[in-house]
Image (cartoon, helix red, strand yellow):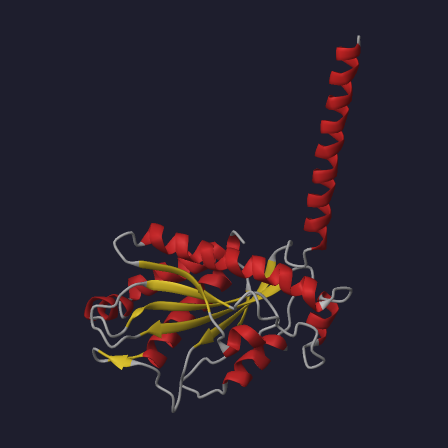
Length: 248
């Protein structure tokens, strides 16, 4: 009788513990401002105008980033996303102008916007190769509640404090970057994967939304450069990045 009672108590304790964990998970998901869906994509073609970026093998970074962004725009719009571009031609933009465009963007408040900046890598060694995605450093808090943010963002984040917003932001940044990297590895298994990295890049630290910076191979590597200039590669890359956003 005593043993049966003890086992019964243990079963009740386990059930209560399970319910508490379930409730905590549900509350965590409910509190996450990025637990819904992506309703707008801000695409940033790195460099432009008087700033060509890296140059090698007859190519310029500013031209490649714009070509890739235009493929991304087409891919995302085909999937029904609202798309905002920081530049659509060979224009020069200050870094602050890029994040200002993102932070003032209109979007469906039932979802949330994401910021994707496209760059091309370069190195002194012509053998350097591969693909990598950057997120902001987790110990750097973005000023998510800045008075200069757009009305939609202020409304979206109402009721949150900056610490909790950055906690959720770090999680979704890492998830988006990881999805892009895994999709790239699956689509291009013969290419080197350098993985997800964190850095204090200005646009990542000033975009008040999930944000990644994609370094698409190395312009200084002849094989990488030839591949990046290929229209088919650019379209496949656009599909990989759009798939990652779909699955966010």
